[in-house]
Image 1 (spheres, rainbow over the protein chains, first blue to last red):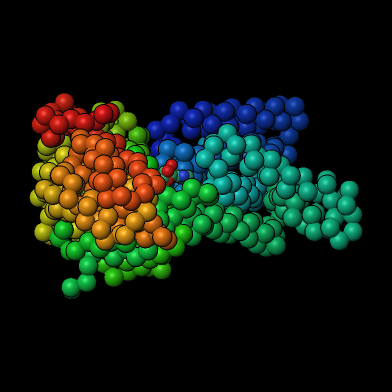
Image 2 (image 1 turned 30 degrees about the horizontal axis):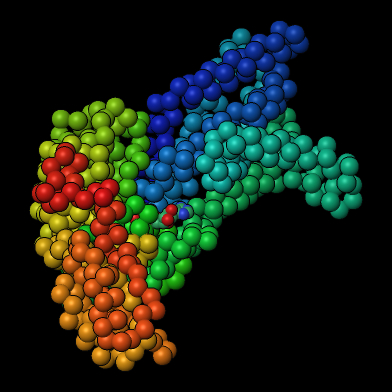
Length: 238
Length: 328
Ligand SMILES: Nc1ncnc2c1ncn2[C@@H]1O[C@H](COP(=O)(O)OP(=O)(O)O)[C@@H](O)[C@H]1O
Ligand SMILES: [Mg+2]
């Protein structure tokens, strides 16, 4: 596995994020909406508690992360530049990892930008930093899982809009598995409920970091990356 | 190291129901410049994409530098520089950043990346464009960037799909000189639908038509061979030997090729281009007292292909002076 090739692809993708208007629009929109949630919750509740607001950020990520991943592989397929990548002596896994890392860096930059609000609160009062840090860990893990699945969907289509819609749909359904699980009940219900993004996220903003949740998110990341790699690789023998 | 650079055996490729390549076999020796000549849709791009590992063959094998394109794809890709047809590039990168990226993923050592990028930019005359965004380049410059990325890791084998399309006449001459200068140390396959293009650049030409190799020759013989004859099919009830001798005796007949049939003598007759010998053939058969069962001109495949090829240079200079038959 070539680290140099992976990092070269990551750098190329980051360059292309920041060369595009859409990236700035996504960041601006994300900051605006999260900012509005933060200020409203503090103003309305008059409480120095970010638990619910950070859960809202997780929901906002549901909308934003498909926009981060939609072009990663779709665009290269549509424009034909994928031909340059796959005829170079690199493995599909390197392409996938390079792109995943770029999206992850983008996510971290976005999350870091929202840290402005908690820091502001900390400077005025003394909220407990533990739950805030745990919530950010949860947001990072959940964002990574979203990105990994988004990358997989992006490998399946050359159309970015289709990639966005299907990724958003997939994430939303998994997020809501808990609600759906009631319909099925029994074995199926409990499996669905154990896979629901929501269930794995809720404890982080309370300051509880459960290994089970961390392992769950990491498993989803690996699952998405392996699928993306398989889709790219299938062209070599199809 | 006497094995050929490229060995293709019984290669076929179908896209769903479309059979794009049928049973293609050829070899390319080390250091040779070989041209794939054929009209659009002939199967040139498909063949090249299989060689570079972009598409799997449906059947048959392709060996590049001793490595099978399916089983040892990575090893094959390490040895090949590939210029795709109508290359797509990353428009949001500068020429230099793009070439450095390509050098890195093609495995050029970190210390040599800058040096190699500078070298290929000089080779393809891109130096003054180093910091320009690729999206802002003209067609000609984009094509040069494509050529530069194919050369950047100094691969022993180059696969260039229609390398001069979209270039102006001066750039075409420069590009051909560049390709010729690669001969010897590099094995080059280039494709074209322009006859003079391959004639000027290549040492050997494979003519591809409807997914098959229909002729293979040195460029100096090729035009004559492609234009040389027209064909008539004739079926006669009579003794094959005598009929054949009678047909061969007709002035203007270049060759009489027997085609096996039960009970009747069937022949293909090649004659000089522009002559119609049907009446003479009919007369000869009647004179021999045999039964004429069929007599019709056959569009000779090479002739047809020749008519579909572009015989004119893009700048309007005819490649075969006084014999521009395009669209005839
Ligand atoms: N991706 C594809 N899907 C379906 N048919 C294709 C595809 N690529 C090429 N073909 C068909 O295969 C044949 C050969 O095409 P191609 O290799 O591009 O020829 P050339 O490069 O000589 O113009 C054509 O009939 C073309 O329509
Ligand atoms: Mg082609």
